[in-house]
Length: 261
Image (cartoon, helix red, strand yellow):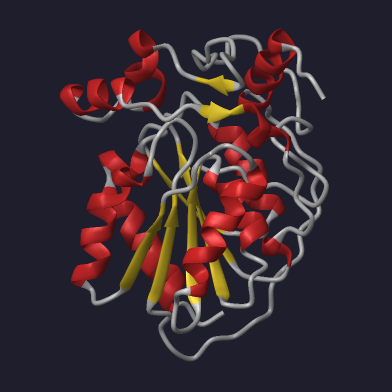
């Protein structure tokens, strides 16, 4: 079905500004006795897995087995398939971690039996039947508008000149400039993929809310994390918190890996 470029852009901007979601919390009850040693990291839109490097190093120093998914961000189905390929290679239970759009990916891929715990880093925690396209709400007056350009050949990009301020406000300027110029085009088809079953309804989750986020408003993050029944940590920081404060991100992942719940 052919998409209307203007409609797609409005959908994305509207979603990134939403402040309310239907609430349907299901508290997980699974108990764990041992540390989960396998960690799989999933990136979001506009970036690739390289941004996880510092988090990776911190976890490796703690003797975790860490894998990074290079999902193509072309469609939710393709990204879930890429994630499951990495999950298949793990030798035991997994802590599955997603940033931003990667949250939608882990919500679906997290139904894999190897996934024991979910960690959302400023991420979309969607529910069954939802997609990035269908979870729409009007942005509140005065809310920052992510500088998403109109789609070109089915892909979205951020305005390079505004990338740092919106996505990576607390990242070193040279690094933020590099990220702006190394953007991975985000496929509009990825926005339409619907969740068939939300993994957080059956498995425990953790959520890092970034209080200075200009991409997904903090209030939206709080609503999604509450709905998921997640253990929540809040920190000052931009959407690129995994780059600017890797220790905070790694600490939350380790909290999930060692939790008795």
